Image (cartoon, rainbow, N blue to C red; front, side, top):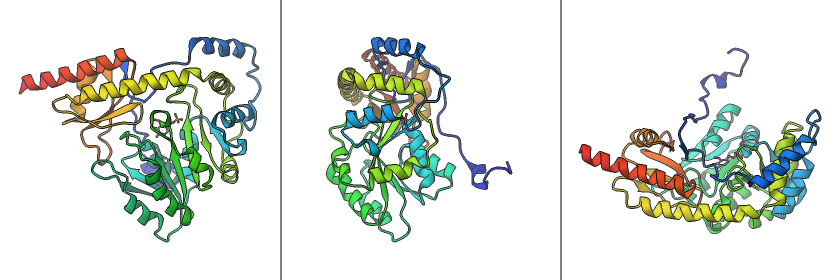
Amino acid sequence: MKAFKPHLAELPFYPYEHHQAPIKLDQNESPYDLPQALKDEVAERLKETPLNRYPAMDAGPIKRAIAAFEGWPEEGVVVAPGSNAVLSTLALAARRVLDLVPSFSLYKWAAKVAGTPWEGVPLGPEFELPTTALRAHLEDGEEPGVFFFPNPHAPTGRFWGPEVVESVVAPAAASGWLVVLDEAYYQFAPSDFKKPARELPFVIIARTFSKAWGLAGVRLGYLLADPGVAREIEKMLPPFRIPTPTAMFALAALENPGYLAETVEKIRRERERVYLELKAHPTWQVFKSHTNFLLIRTPDAEAAFTGLLKKGVLVRRMDNQPGLEGCIRVTIGTPVENDAFLKAAFELAEEERAEG
Ligand SMILES: Cc1ncc(COP(=O)(O)O)c(C=O)c1O
C-alpha cells in the first residue's frame, strides 16, 4: 500500500477475536444493562430528536454532566466516543510512549498506528510495579512522552495504592512526562487517584462508561485533566464527535446514577466468590483482582480456552503477551454465568485428571 506511511505495512490487527457462546465473559463488560425504565425514557426522547442535525460541537451538555458528577472543572473534561479514541490520540501526539508489559493492548497498538516510539517496562514476577525501572526511563534525560498507567491494572487486576502511584508520578513530573492514569475499573478498587490528580497538571485521569456503568455499546469515555492540558488535547480531536444517541444515554445514566452502586457491589461480591472458589482448582492459579475480571494462569491457555468454549463459556486468551504465558482472563458475570464458568472449569480439571 504505497499511499500509506511505510510503518503501517507491518501493523498488527488489534488483538481481539470474535467468538459466539451462550455465556460471554471475554470483554470485561458489565453483565447488567442500563435499567429498562431509563432505556425506555431515552428511546422515547430519541423519537422526538432531530437526527438530521449535528450534535453540539463541544459536547457541552454531556461534558457539564460529567464535570458535575466528578466534581471537576468543565474546562478540564475531554469526552470521546470510547476512552480508546482519546487514548489513541494521546499516543499519536506523544513524542514517545512508555508502557508496562503486560498491559492493556491498546496503548502499544495505538503507538504502532501512530508511528510513535514505544518502550515497555516488564512488571515483576508477581506483577509488581517496576518502580525503579520506570524511574530510570522517566529520568533518562531524553525527550519526555506519555506514560500509560492503568490502575487498577489490566489485564492482571493488580491495584497500586496512592503512595506507589506517587512514587512514579513525581519523577515523571520533574522531567516533563504526561502520566495517563487509566482508571477504567476504578469503581471496583479500594480507592482512586482523582483527588491528588487535581493538584498535578501532568497527570490525566481516563475513565469510561463501558464497564461499571454498563454502557459499552454506547461508546463514551473521558479524561479529567488540567484545563490547559485539556485544551491542547481538544485541538486534536474531531468536531461533533459524540453521537446524539450516545450523549442521550450517558446523560440519562448520569442523571440517575442510583443503579451504579448496586451493580458495583454485586460484581465485587461475585468477584470475591469466584476468586475463592477458583483457588481450589487443582491446576489453575487465580490472581487477586480489583477489577471486574480475574486473570488465571493455566498449564495451557489454548486448551483452557477451547475446553471452556466447548462447554458454552467464552473467556479471553491472554497468553499473547510476555509474562502471561498460559493465562486466560474471565469477566465477572451474573451469579448464574459465574456458576456456569466455575462448573466448566472444574469439569475440565476432572476430565484432565481422568485422561491422566
Ligand atoms: C484499561 C482499559 N482502558 C480502557 C478500556 C476501554 O474503554 P472504552 O470502552 O471506553 O474505549 C478498557 C477496556 O477493556 C480497559 O481495559
